[in-house]
Length: 177
Image (cartoon, rainbow, N blue to C red):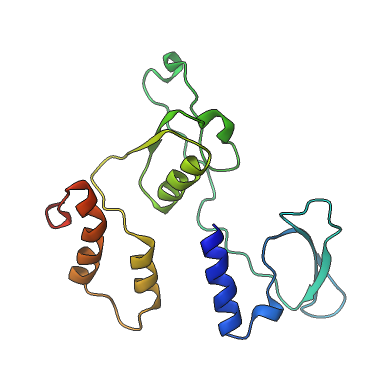
């Protein structure tokens, strides 16, 4: 998280946006103001909940919530007999205090699952196993950045060679996955 903040701040400075960007704030309220394309946003710092916050006026409000719109519930056979903690990690349902020093299984294999591996480890989880329907390769963030910032498509062999650096630590060949 801290490294991402450093990267975003540095990018904002490099592109002349730092003075117009607010980091670590929660938007508490959005209100349309008189006139065309004017909005007021009440913001409060995430790290300082007692701070009064600030009112920001802008010409547009943009939000990118992703496509996680509806929780797809799956009931596993014998789930009611398990006796352990089962929860969906979306929609703020997860109680991360219950994972400390525990071995956890995550079901799924999208970017959200991989982000939850990190979140679980940050909350003191002992071990995380990712379970999915079929074998998938996890890409490193640096490879995602390469793909996102290259003007031309990154050839598949270049991506697999970059993945292999990580998978060498496990003795796994990405070319035969």
